[in-house]
Image (cartoon, rainbow, N blue to C red; front, side, top):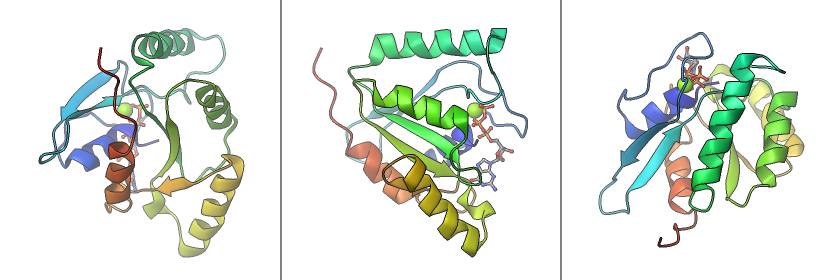
Amino acid sequence: MGKSSLLNALVKRKVARTSAAPGKTRLANYYRVQRGTARAVYLVDLPGYGYARGGDPAAREFNRLVEAYFARDAVEIGVLLLVDTRHPGLESDLEAWHWLRGQPCPSAVVGTKVDKLTRAERARHARDLESVFDGPVLLTSAETGEGLDELWKMIASLPRPTAA
Ligand SMILES: Nc1nc2c(ncn2[C@@H]2O[C@H](COP(=O)(O)OP(=O)(O)OP(=O)(O)O)[C@@H](O)[C@H]2O)c(=O)[nH]1
Ligand SMILES: [Mg+2]
């Protein structure tokens, strides 16, 4: 899907490990990022869910990890759901979005790997994504850097955590 790659592209450093085969990221990895004089944020790289279906142990482990993450941090986080721009409306993505919208934290959908689309596909997939997710979807590429400035703006505009 390109979650770890997008994080690396955002911070312009190869901090998160990536792999062509899914299932590389197994834990919630926190990266504290300070840009200029802006407040520091934590970017949290989570495992994907697409490879772990149904009742298999990887799926159960994923659900446990994500539920623990949300239970602990839900009041302070914003969540970006990353979806592969080439495949708008996968059932697993729609399920995740449905669940996420029921959570108290702000959330948004981000399309990855837009560099892999032709111009014609791009226009069509952009339309399809906004239709299935019922709102704006920011298109990005870790490869070309497209959409990263807008993504930083989106991250910066997430509500400030309430003081503990
Ligand atoms: N062309 C292109 N390839 C990308 C882009 N982002 C990621 N990739 C490739 O997609 C593959 C998966 O990338 P990862 O960043 O490891 O994906 P992930 O979502 O973190 O995967 P897991 O941690 O296994 O869930 C790698 O081969 C990346 O090089 C992109 O924007 N453009
Ligand atoms: Mg990863």
